[in-house]
Structure formats: C-alpha cells, structure tokens
Length: 197
Length: 257
Image (cartoon, rainbow over all chains, first blue to last red; front, side, top):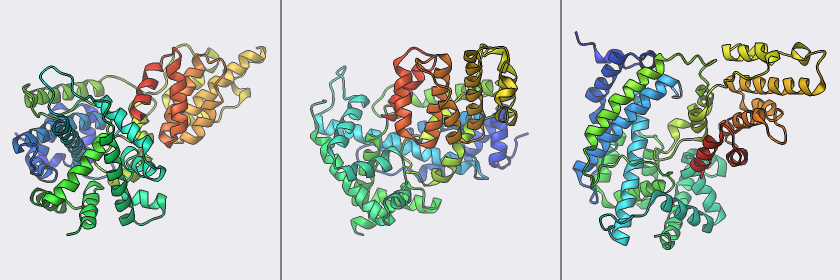
C-alpha cells in the first residue's frame, strides 16, 4: 500500500529517514518532492530569456533538482545541514534555488563570452573556469578599496544586503545601490582584461 | 519602474525575502520585462564570476544524456547515503553542527548564487580525531573524547596524567596531547575560539606529527570563526610540508581563492 507522501514532510522525519538509510522512505521523500513541490520550485526560479532555449532551461532545472536531492540526502545523513525549519521542503528549495541560479549564471557568462570572442572551434580549448578566476582576481586588485570590500562581502563572503548595511552603517537600499555601482565598475575592468584569452 | 526599484526587487529575491507567490510573480516579471531581465542576468553573471571552478550541471549544447546520467547519479547517491549511514562510524558526536550556530543565523538571508560559507566548508572537512599511536598514559582521556565525555577531558589537571618518575620532556609531550584533546573537545562543544587556544599551545617548532594535527584542527576552528587570515596562514603552512593534512589544506586554499 502506498504511503501518504505528506507523512514525510516534516524535517524531523526526513532527518530520521536519511540517518537510518531508510531506502523506501527516501524514495517516498523524492516522490513527494517531485509530485507536490517540483513544479512550484521550477516556477520560482525558471524564467524565459533569449540566450538559452526554454527546453534547455527545464533540463538544467531537472539536473540541478536531482543534484540537490543527492546533496540533501547526504547532508541530512551526516548532520551537516541546518534543520531549523519544521518543513524540510523549504530547506531543499533554498539549496535548489542557489544551485540553479549559480549554474544559470555560469551558463549566461559562457554564452556572453562566446558572443564576445566567438565560439571555440571543435576541439579548441575554450576559456576555462581557472582563466575566469584569474581574471576575476586581477579585476578585484584593480578596483578601488571600498568597492573591493563591498564585492567581497556580497559575492565571496555571501553576505545579504541587510548584513552589509549593518557592517557599513548604511541602510539596505544604499547597500544595494553601492554594490550595483561597484559591480558595473568591476564588470568593465573584467572585460578590459583580455590577455588571458 | 526605475532602475533602483528593479535592483531592490532583485536583491529581495536573491536574499530570500519574498514569499513563494512573490517569487513566482518575480519570475513572470523577469520573463516579460527586458530591462528587469537584463539587470537580473547581470547579477547572476556577476555572482558566477566569483564562483569557484566546479563541474557544470548545464546541459546546453551537450550530446551526452545528462538527464539519464543525473537519475543514475541520484540512485548511486541514495545507495551511498544508505552505505554511509549503515557503516559504524561512531564519532564522538556530529560536529558538523558546530557550523550550525553561524549558518542558522545567516543562511536564510544569503544570496542564492554564492558559494559555501566558511563554516560550511569547515563542516565539510571536519572528521573527529582518530589515532592508534597516542601515548598510553593519556589513553583514558583519548577514549573519553571518543566517547563524547568531554567534561572529563576538560577537567583534567596535569597531576591527573603526568608521570612522576618521567623526565620533563615526556611530561611536556603528554601535556601537549592533553592540550590537543581539550581543543578537540571544545570544538565538539561549539567553542572554536577557546579550542584554538588549546590547539595552538600544542604546536612545536620544528613541527612534528602532533603539531600537524593541532594545526589542522586550529585551521578548522579558524574557518568556523571566519578568521580568514589565520586560515590562510595555517593552510599555507600545512600545504608546504608532507603531512596527512597536506592535500586537504591545499584544497581549502584553492576553495578560498
């Protein structure tokens, strides 16, 4: 007899299932997530845009969903995930959203580089992540100290604008504007460093 | 809508300040409003520039059946998960939770396109200390640490473990081991600051095996505290000389770059 998927929606139950290695329980959790929540999750992260066809965006979301599930189960089992919320689905969504937007950002960046520098011929080496990282470090070195600090807080340390506002003793709206301005300056510098390619 | 209002909406979305319905509405607006979409994509690309090199999940322009592979990976992951939780690991206690106090506060507000925080990184690399070669004179305290009886270790005084007819160097060595155990117990009790004081006092120059271990756990404690300068210093130290933590120290250095 099929178990009620709602039964598995509490974080406490999810943790117990993963820690005990309850295979059937995990299958029901995944089925429950897929049946009850996946469509909503996708609507909250996937948007239509010109550079990547919708079918590939859906596929990207599917891949990230499954990768998130893999990480989620592992972290619940080893206790490295924070389980403060009574419903694990919210926790799963935060991980999924983060993963999807990160992958989308990387893909957008790749498409932009192709548009700027041309697509690499088959077999030719395209700019690597390491080359991007090097370029990012060089751009960070060139930018002003104030901007470097703001960008580091936001994009490397992962602070929210609320946290930046507290550190900088400004309001949240000012943090958003300042980080945006610094981001534009950083993007200009990043584009100006071409010799890595 | 002016650009500032767009930026605020984007920040609200990325900082997790919207309701589920608000997020769906935001996605619809991004799809339909080219100006908002351009700003949002800029933000995603910007975050991607700071993302460390990792294998991409993107299926774009690839011929390999990624969906099938991902399903297979998920099945394998579940199997691995089952294996992990069924093998007797018997650590003193789950210490990954040391990271929890920090991440519990900031995780909901974190932008969603960013990499793991330092405490999460620390939790990923943390394993309880395990050794079969520690001095027998302090084996009681080692076992108490492994059993999770941290108070016994933390309350120990030199008179409890030092050997009366031993030379000063032997007792000094025992004391260093006890500093290590106390530091490890404090890590388990989510006190990385105090733990570092004990761990740091177990170092010697030139470094020996005990110093390597103490420096490794000092590094993790510094990660939990977000003390990047100390992390870089210790990781750099450990990555330059042969020791059991050399590869992990190198990886941490790479992840923090």
